[in-house]
Length: 133
Image 1 (cartoon, one colour):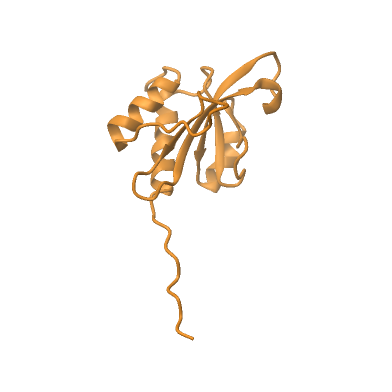
Image 2 (cartoon, one colour; image 1 turned 90 degrees about the horizontal axis):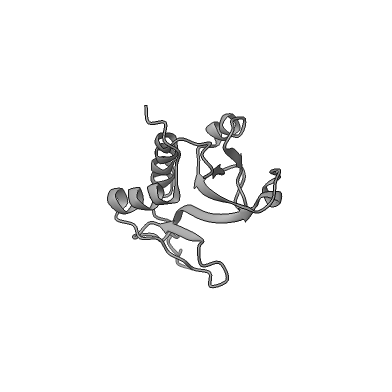
């Protein structure tokens, strides 16, 4: 079992190698916020950003890097009970989870969750056909 901690570099390298994804940096005011999207449908499957510890309800000063992932709602409760996992920051808390990138989540587990997030957002959204009136 890989006990190394999950890092931003791990996430971005894995996304590039496995999914062919380059990060998108959509916000000028926060140039270090990286969004990973599907090429086909443009849906997000990961968001990496730095957030103030106080905003996350964590003790201490300064910021912490986090990763938001879409997650099976059945897993979210169990994950949030463990160190390194938080309710999703600025995302739907029933379908997304936040992972702390401070050494508390292993590389192996984080990349498994990244795979799940990618798979759960892969489907394309299609409009219902218009009905003739």
